[in-house]
Length: 108
Image 1 (cartoon, rainbow, N blue to C red):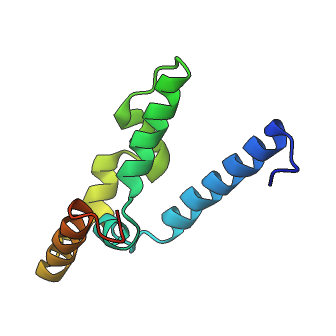
Image 2: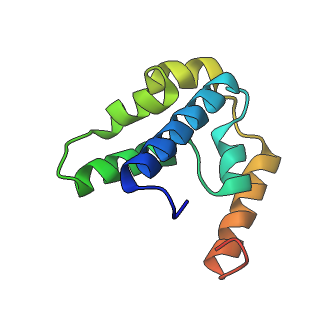
């Protein structure tokens, strides 16, 4: 993508991000814990990254507003309607991933 000017590259990145949000919205059955286990990020991470990006540019964006943008609804509504309780296997897999990361494993 080096051949693209900054504005075009930014537009493409923004379009890809919006598509990721639509994809996550269309796949609400994919739980945040599963995303964390597999990819080390989740919808909440995306929300935090938006807040950080805003701060880096001198803008104000609170976490709850960012979460509502990422989730497409208030987080409390998403959680009540779409978040399943984490299973023992999911919790164990997340803990194992965090341990590997803390120990400098391949996931770090």
